[in-house]
Image 1: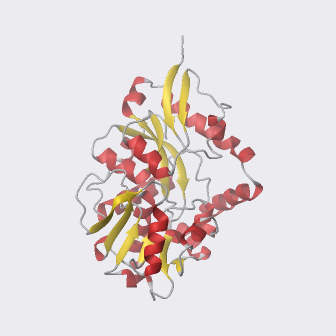
Image 2 (image 1 turned 90 degrees about the vertical axis):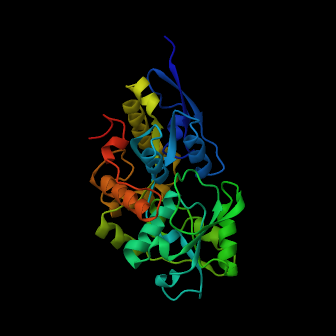
Image 3 (image 1 turned 120 degrees about the vertical axis):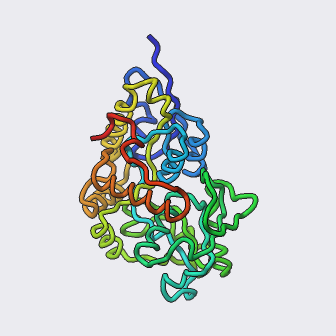
Amino acid sequence: MANTRITMGIPDHPRTRAIIDGDINIDGYDLDLTYKFASPGERHYRFAQGEWDVGEYSAATFMRTREKGKAFLALPIFFERGPRQRNIFYREGNLSSPTDLKGKKIGCFRYGATAVVWERGYLLDEHGLKTTDMSWYVSGKEVFIGQDLPVKVERLEPPTPFGQEKAVLSRLVSEGALHAALVAGDMGYFGIFGGGTLPRIMGKFPGVKPLFDDTEDAIRWIKRTRLYPIIHLIAMKEEAAQKYPDLPAKLVEAFRAAKRAAPKYMKRDEIDGYEKEAAVVGEDPYDCVLGDMEKRTLQALNRYQIEQGLMRKELALESCFVPGTFK
């Protein structure tokens, strides 16, 4: 009997490379993989349009599409994580404190991007800045919003192509047209310890610096809040989960196996970085489980989206995941 063909859109990453290379297979299924993209935004947009059976997806967008009745379910595979406060940029000398952002115009690459939701949530919880305290400028194309927003949003038309949004925002911050910009970028251990490529990319224009750049503050925030932001997850069409009931659990096991194989695709400094990250978090954040920290984190993401006008209600968390793939 021929295997069933499953389409999947995933990143080319050490934690997927064994799947892409065919070293890890899924019994009874042939994977038709797409893994080359201009940016994660393009990948998430294409999954939201129903292009694949299974795909890496923006966690915040998943929640919004779930609330609106789109037939996607999540798997407990949390692909990209990490604190986002280092991804808030300003022009040096323009602010004396984060609260100076009140009443200002703030840029972002997508209003509904998961990274931006987390950054606004951080400004709310840690600095008392409500989303409605600021006006917003968006340089890129949204993946999915689904309802009217409670804030003024100015948009660049036509939107900047996927993968090119940061340069627009950096220039506008440097020129003073924006007071700050909330962007995506280096995740995982870079979000805790700094480094990576994002400061270099955003710093191409004069004076543009991270607003928060303190490793000890990031570590204290993780330990105090017991939040570890989930940025991307793996989701699938509900129709596929119902039609092939053995597939979801097999996918989880395949991604777990790919994660175990990941070190052979990494340099020593990457391996060390992930080990340091796990030590700070107190667990391996990529273990493909829906644990207490993951639940608390997703509940916070849901809460932030309600405050930001992106969602209206709290979701029953377990109902968002394929039954039988989590404890």
